[in-house]
Each structure stands twice: as structure tokens, then as C-alpha cells.
Image (cartoon, rainbow over all chains, first blue to last red; front, side, top):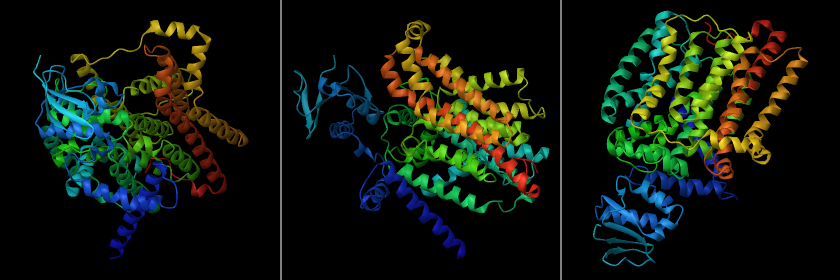
Length: 139
Length: 444
């Protein structure tokens, strides 16, 4: 029993230390910082940890939505609109986040920001708040 | 799933049992709780796992063959050491180390992948390896395909074991890199001042870099661990310290390309010090030489594969260097960002303070600290030359990379200070009570 208690104490100490490091590293300030770790960060991670594809909430909204649409329609490759390419981060995040769906210049699936027009000849397949997915004839 | 992930500890330790088996058979070390031996075991495990992945290519084949080897190695090592197992000498240090490791597990795995380099390079490579089922020519290493794959391979193996990819679990591979730096610090427990200095230096790397997959941080820690074990070996620590140094430097070679500069700096510094007779290499049994070279096999094999697959990328040229070296403004910019980086300045100040302490005792810097000191200076000077040769915009390159890559040089200099401080503490301990003098590292 003493061994079990000691193990429990070590584990508890480790979790509290992790909280302190996490709060410090994220530069959370104020008296509720450690509480935010125990009530938000830790429970969310524990709930998501075991799910395939979890954790993509760190990505920008248009990227998240584009990924969901590409996967939902079983795309194997895609290309991006000028609006998507213009952002410094979106093309990079979409390429690595979407893998093994590959970025190809001649892909039929076309990802664009919701505010953009679908190119002539392409048909809109799905539109979400920040991104849309279209299907285009392959050149 | 937790149980499956827990097996990774036995997998790495079993794979790396080779130094333990060799040392037990040769009777070179009689202390199983020797932290240097444990560090050697862990780093050999990481290096051999990397070598297996590069040789077998398939993730499943690597895991099956690796598990069989780990089982054989682990059982052999435990059998050979069975009569010599006893309680560790510093149980509090062990508890502190375990708490630190467990805290690191929580801190590292609780946040999804977020850092740019971690997402775009290291874990993107891991994802590509995972979805391809192994490392092939067409695996899909899109960005910096020539970068070494020790961590991506490990992260892909973690995902293969759990059966899926998400943004949390592959980061567990980072936790598997932490035992050697922790064991390196704990190994200094007999000299608290040196231990505190090393601990502060290692922790100063920061959670931002260690927790989100910056390989610069891990390269710095492993180069520093290698430098400390090398100093132990020069002080007569025996074969176990040589193997610990070789293992740590072997892991460094699998982490990031800058390890080539680390190797060059160590080779140059050791040669200079040997030729100038500042240091002398301890007598080493012949059988340890191939064993000490084994951790470098993964690094060398990846160089070969990179050449065969034409993965080399340019980006540096002598033509870019000349105008920068001859232009005082540009030259100063490089020196300011690399040679006079804040981390380097702080460590140099520390070296001056330790040096003053040594002089107050009427002593000089110990010779065993010289390789780390010279290697650190050469590494930093080398990076001044590398930045001068960049084909990219100098200002952008310095702003985005200088403080990351110089970290390794700063930690090498810090290790020189740690070794010097340790020598000072030992001298003080000897002066106060000769009976309490700690035994030399690795010696029975």
C-alpha cells in the first residue's frame, strides 16, 4: 500500500508540475491560469487523445473545413485557389494536414475560400462557412 | 493503448542492451545502476532502431525484428547482470528524474502539433512514413527530404503501433528522446553545483522547443550529453563513458543535419588537443572500437541513401560568402547574430566566473573540459561561415535560424563550464574530507 501511495504521489506531482510548465510555456497569466489547464487543456487532450485525426483544431478554420470536405468526398488529390495560395500558412497546413491526399496541379478537386468564385467549368460540391470544395474537369 | 505505448520503453531499452551485455561479459563495470551505462543503453536503443528502419524500410518489419532483438538483448542483459542489481545510490535523484519524465509526458502530449518546423518537417515526414508503411524512395518526403529521420521514424512507429495518426500521439516520440538528457544531469548528483548548472542549462532550452518538436533543441541536448561523457572518458571513466558518448553523438547524427558540424567540431578539437598534447586518450580495449562506432551506422547509412536517392539540396555556396566576408556591415551582422548571441554571451560569462574560481584555487581549466570548450567555439565559428555562404537573404536566414542553431554551441561551452565546476567541487570535497571523495565515474 505504501508503494502504491508513493506511486500515486509521484504521479500527482508529475501532473501538477506538468500544469505549471504548461501554464508558464503558454504564458497564461492571472490567477485562473492553472485552473484553465485543469479544466480545459487537460480534459480536452484526454478526451481527444485516443481519436484518429484529433487535434486539428490548432489549424486555421478554412484549412480545417477544407480537410473535412476533402476527406468526406474521398479525394485522392487536390489543388488550391489563388486565395488559398495567397496566405502564408494555408497551403503548407493543407498539404501536410491532408496527407496522404496529395497536392497536384492537375487534380479534379478544387479547394477555395468561401468568399471566392468557383472557376468556369467547375461545379460547386460543398460550401462551408470559410471554405468551399469544387470539382473541375482535369486539364 | 497505454499498455502498448508503455512497451516502447522496453523496446528501446532492450534494443540498446548491447553495451550492457558487452560490459557484463568483459567485466568492465560492476554497477548496474551506473547512470552512464543506462544512458548508453538508451542511446544505443534509439540508434539501432533508426538503423533497423533504414535497413528494413518497412515499419512492420522494423517493429517485429526490433521486438525480437529487444527481447533477446533485454533478457541477456538482465541474466548477465542478475547478481549485481541493487538499490540506486541516490534514490531522491531517481524520483526527481522520474517526476520530470512523467511531467514531460503530460506536457508534451497534451498539446497537438503546432510549431511550424515540427508540423512541416519532422512530423510531416513521420506522417508520410506512416501512410507509406515505411521508408521508400516515393514515401513523399516533400520538404527538406535530406533531413535525418530518427525522430520521424520513431513517431511513425508510435502511430503504427496505435494504428492511426492524430496530432497528439506521435509526439510521444519526443518523450522517448528525453531519458538520456535526464540521465546526464542525474549523473552529476555527486557534485551538486555542476548538476545545478547543467540542469539550468538544459531546462533553459525551454518547453517551447522541447515540447513541440524542434530538433535543434534535442540536437543541443545530445551534443552536450556526448561532450560530458567524452570528458568523463578522458578523466578515466572507462569504457562505459566512451559508449555513452558514442551513443549520444550517434543519436545527434540522426536528429538534424547540423550534427555534421558537431562531428567536425569534435574531430577538429580532439585532433588539435592531441597534437598539441593537451589531452591524451585513455587506453581502450580493441573490442570497444567497433561497438563505439555502431551508433554512427544510421547516420552513415542515411548519407548513403540520400546520395542514392538524390535527396541533397543546395542553398549554400562559396560565391555567396566572399561579398559577405569582405563587407564589414554584413560580416558584423553575422558575428552579432551567431558569435555574440545572448546564449553564447551568458555561457562565456559563466566560463569566466568558473575560471576565476579555479584560479582562486590555484588551478587551471581541467584538460577534460578542453574538447567541449574548443568544439563549442569551432561549432560557433563554423556557423558564422555557413551563414556567410547562404544563398538565401542573409537577414531573413539569421532572423529565422541563428538563435536555434547556436544553441548547440552554447550548450557545448556550458558543458566545459560544468566539467570545470565539477573538478572544482571534487577538489573542495577532497580538501574537506578525503574519505568522502566520490569515486570516478564508471569505476567499480
